[in-house]
Image 1 (cartoon, rainbow, N blue to C red):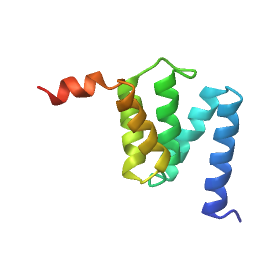
Image 2 (image 1 turned 60 degrees about the horizontal axis):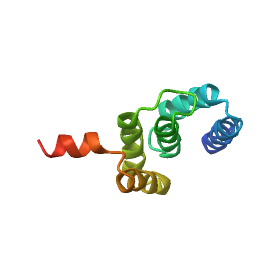
Image 3 (image 1 turned 90 degrees about the vertical axis):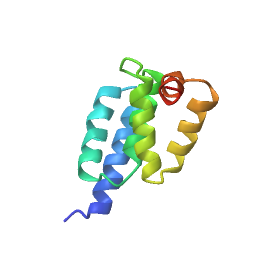
Length: 102
């Protein structure tokens, strides 16, 4: 019987392998499964954010990237903190600044 920890690791490994091989849609399918089955783990939120920020196999959507990174941050996933900070540093969050200045 496969433990939850083993399944989590297997799904993460598979999603990242597909991501590295530029099979982004297949990777996103697994990431959606991870989010559904392991909603408290920040890994999938972060990698989804990367794909939306960098337009990997999907139309670029900085708002969605911000939302996914924020979800990763809420789950204390360190890469999400870095990626969200980089979005601020590189001026990719004008929509957020405009919203906050209203």
